[in-house]
Amino acid sequence: ITFLDTPGHEAFTTMRARGAQVTDIAILVVAADDGIMPQTIEAINHAKAAGVSIIVAVNKIDKPGANVDRVMQQLTEYEIVPEDWGGDTPVIPVSAHTKEGIDDLLEMVLLVADMKELKANPDRAAKGTVIEARLDKGRGPIATVLVQNGTLNVGDIIVAGTTVGRVRAMMNDKGQRVKNAGPSVPVEITGLDDVPTGGDIFNAVSDERLARELVEQRKTTQKEERFNSRTKVTLDNLFDQMRLEDMKELKIIVKADVQGSVEAVRQSLEKLTNDEIRVNVIHSGVGAIRESDVMLASASNAIIVGFNVRPDAVAEENAKRDGVDMRLYRIIYDCIEEIEAAMKGMLAPKFKEVLLGKVEVRQTYKITNVGLVSGSYVLSGKVLRGAQVRVVRDGIVIADDIIASLQRFKDSVKEVAAGFECGITLERFSDIKEGDIFEVYQMEQIEQ
Image (cartoon, rainbow, N blue to C red; front, side, top):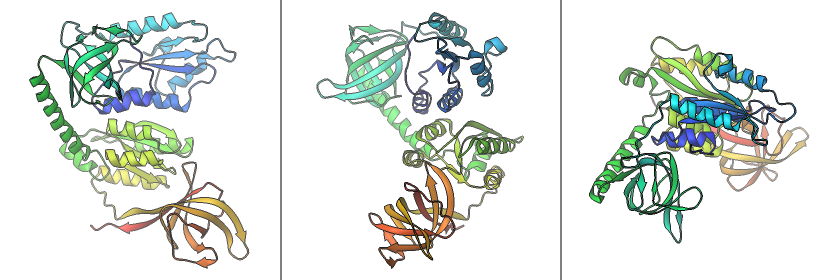
């Protein structure tokens, strides 16, 4: 048994997006005293999307306040029904501190592996996945790989992604040099001519000419994948994909400011399911749109719907790079109407939002006959008097307003650029705090 102790979204999305399935069984660890936490829900949804079997380990059963039944009840809310309650998910109470239940957990892993018929043939050329890789100044490119089929030997010529090399040396998980590694064995190898990428598939081949040919094929495939990434599902192309590619399911990730909104948006979207296409909310949660949400959307070909929330900077950048469609709303009706229109092929966007700049509120003060003024610093872009502005606090949109006045020192100005301080007064909203972010934008009409 090889354990990959990595964040759930890394194991289930990044590598899966690259075509690798390194995880056969997911062990979901839930604390018996805390119960299911937001990150647990995220891990459940990522594991489901990856299609791997789940075993739940309820940890900390030695602590006062441990309640295994409560955890089992919470699991059913996420469609994970324990075996003891007539479902098909094994739930094993354990204590990492006292080691109680650990043997039961390992036995269950072997049982599930046996039932899934997870088998490999050691008597063939090795195939597996690059878990991680780095460049060492003294030893050159080093890759940690998991052999998933066959046996890898020192001296084998291997292709990892678009990298070729001959295995010069291998080390096992204990740091000992080994000459070969069979199925389900992780090893660190040297000898590659470049640093591969985590998630790359590696193959041992019989001769270098074949290896070079395989690399050329993979480079061609990568180009095709880059091209295909441009045709990820979006609301704009949804109807065409339904018609031309026989698409039967629209996958959506929902993020909102409060749990009530999450449930309302989720239920409203799922009601849009019809005979032609099923709307499947594969993940939902409270808070800003994060990098892991974009990773899941990219790997699952899903769109992201945000209700009263914004993406963080990394998520926004990754969504643009990966072609993930993010739709942000403040009114549930607008969200439902737009997605329903997309499903009917009637979506006709007339305006697009253009972000002008971002501003951080450094201090606030009141001026007679003017009201609350936000002493601010322009982080990027520019600020225009009369432009629309969103007030964002901790990743949540708390207001949408218009810039009523803009000042530099005591002078009223039309525009302030990045790197300068200014005073901003909004038309209506005045509950502004230090640290709030103003996203300044304007709506531009799209040519039809």
